[in-house]
Amino acid sequence: MNSSIVRTLPAALALALACIGGAAVAQTTTQKAENAGEKAWDATKKDTEKAWDATKHGSEKAWDATKHGTKKAVKATEKGAKATGKAVDNVASDAAAGTRKVGDKIGEKIPGTEQNEAAKKP
Image (cartoon, rainbow, N blue to C red; front, top):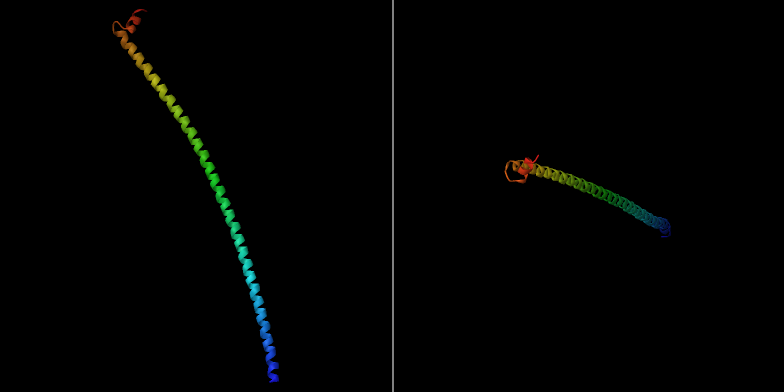
C-alpha cells in the first residue's frame, strides 16, 4: 500500500497544481476579456461622440446656410417688388397723362369748355 501512495501522490499533486494553474489562466483570460471590453466600449463611446459632434456641426452649418439663403431671397424679393411697384406706378402715371392729353384734345373741339377757350386765345 505504501508503494501505491507513493505513485498516487505525485499524480494527485500534479493534478492539483494543474487545476490551480488552469484557474489562474482562466482568471487572466477573464481579465483580458474585461480589458478588451472596456477598450471597445471606450472606442465606441469616443467614435459615437465624434459622430455626434460632426452631425451637430453639419446641422449648424446647414441651418446657417439656409438662414443666409433665406435672407438673400427675402432681400431679392423685396427689391423685385419695389422695382415692380415703381414700374407699375410709372405706367399708371403715363396712362393717366395720356388720358388727360386725349381729354384735352377732345375738349378743344367742344364749344364752351376750358380747353376750347384756351385753344382760341393764341
